[in-house]
Length: 224
Image (cartoon, rainbow, N blue to C red; front, side):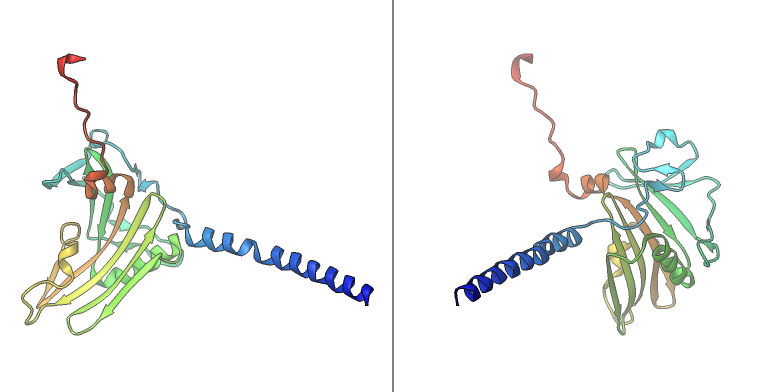
């Protein structure tokens, strides 16, 4: 009986150690996967322009609009309005490319294309960046939408494909939140947005969260 007790105790200790070895890494694996904010091939700019580049260093830009918050929109002279072939997806004709600057620094680009090209653009994004971080799809009598986003460490990508029929409606349901960035196409009673945004978040956060910006230091009286 004594030998049996010791054997049972030894087996119990061995099982406890084994269980601890198996289960201990699980919380760490869970935390590392859930806390990851990245996607494949996070871009450091758009085409040949890196994020944060000053407008003064880009001589081929043409100013299109300036907002009250200081954000300026430019287009580029002689822009190539084709998205090059990616994998088995043929090159795609774009309608427009808009470059956004804040404090004269490049932080966002919006590419616009015909509604018929939206599915091809989405396939390109999936091919280059992998599965999106999130997707919002809706379809009813007023809205058909398929919006996806990729959240990176410093760059967010938003794919926006939205058709809104305002027949009998007094206000926009979903279009209004995108109007400042993306052009709205009118077809009969329908309003359509088809665009993709690349956003450099370190600068974008300065615009949308001014409280995070450091206030100017007040000079002490007496000139000291």
